[in-house]
Length: 147
Image 1 (tube, rainbow, N blue to C red):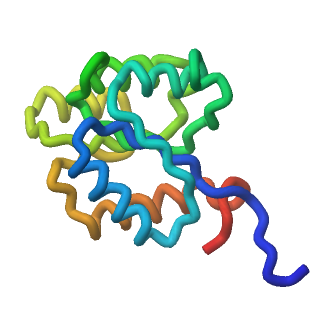
Image 2 (image 1 turned 135 degrees about the vertical axis):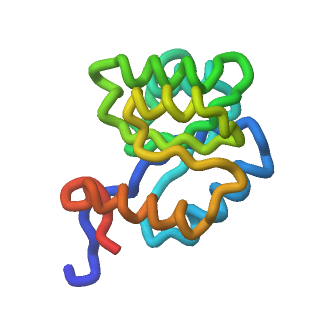
């Protein structure tokens, strides 16, 4: 049985309404030495349904990592983030904010909600990949495939 791996890939939820920004994040994740499955959603309402496993997402996997834009249609990313971080079952999921907002109030609010990182677009790919690798190490031992 040598060569077999144990565990599972990291479940990543990308919530981003910009096709260009989503393509950049997806491309960067392909370069990360972290086995993963990615779900890309374009608005806050769908993302809320996904994390709460409601509607068409009743069988959705629990994300191991959420990459979240703050400015989203239907339900704002700030509101979604506050919902996630105030929910006992969801608040332990690491959230990385990927946004074009440099507003100090947004930065302060996300820090209060204990996000793992706040990255402004355009995202520095090297910093992004390092962050993904660091987050993967956080729970690699029993959750994801070894690299």
